[in-house]
Length: 378
Length: 83
Image (cartoon, rainbow over all chains, first blue to last red; front, side, top):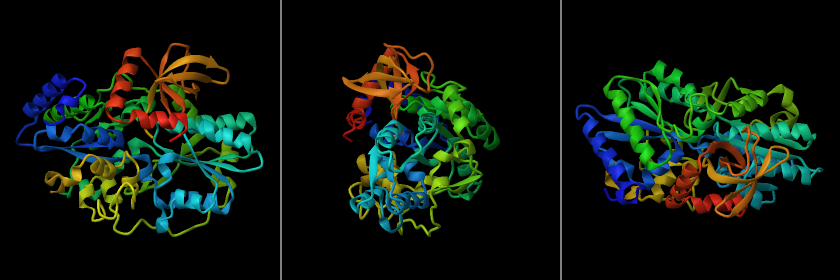
């Protein structure tokens, strides 16, 4: 328990660890997927795995927005910046993700493309106001937490008559991904991997509420516990999952009641629903095409849709060879099972998105020294 | 980029905007996703938008946790725009 003194409340951490030890039945094994990269980070930072009995395992999920964006969409963004002479505004996390031929936004920028890192869609709107003669495209990525700000920006652009502002929309949906992961052959009975329950994301659930997970929990008979991002939250949520598994329950429970309600932020949901609509299908890195898992801009706002304004060419996009990001994102491989990990692929010279983003599983393994742990290499 | 940081509302401005303060860093954010935000409130801010209201106690606790986890400075740098 080398990390326990670093917990905000070490006594509570010890109590939770003891309860988990006592309630995890030796005859079972428990595999819990933490969907969100923020949880992956907390689990590693605080050594939560070390506080678990040997039959309780974490499976790292795809909840890293930068990581799940398929190479093709990144290549499209690079094309927008290079071929259409736009000002491409992007969240900083995207800059170093390698696209086909390891071409990233930062390389395109070095070669002269006008690519600007922004903190917020508010900054992208300001760039559009300041540059009326230029086309400004906001490269929108992210899960449900990051989607409402995109919707607000589009409404704002419409209200102001900002004709030079468009959005390249890549927003994706968490509950659809959970269902899709469980449909994968690896997770079928007798498959090579297992998930017995999910730690649900914190801030995504603040927006959408806990209700959208109920269908998947019931259909796949897997418990979901919405967990705060503090390590104590994670441990308490694991205990709640163990209790559900032991009692053969598969319900959605909410540990993060400080912030999350069943219905979430309805105002944010209404804004998103007004501006964006469901895509039939969307490609995720690692998961492939997932039906009803992403949003596009509604026809009423098509003037603000970069995919409508610009002709993006069809292209053959490729992952970096040997990069195991796709399998890692599905939870079927660990970073240490990738032969690039820690050798040619490091945070300073990332080959895959999971090493670029601090929310990626590879970056978490790297940062917290798990690459040296024989237990995890096994 | 999925992180949300607690901030105190200093002033409410037109067009659903507000001036907030996080660890003495002042920032103009949007409150378009919330109703009834007023000065003195604490809000969780994500990519420049207030996402949720929270208590002062929860705000302080979240900030100290972010500092402890080593992600506070990174977030503040992003907010200041020098990330």
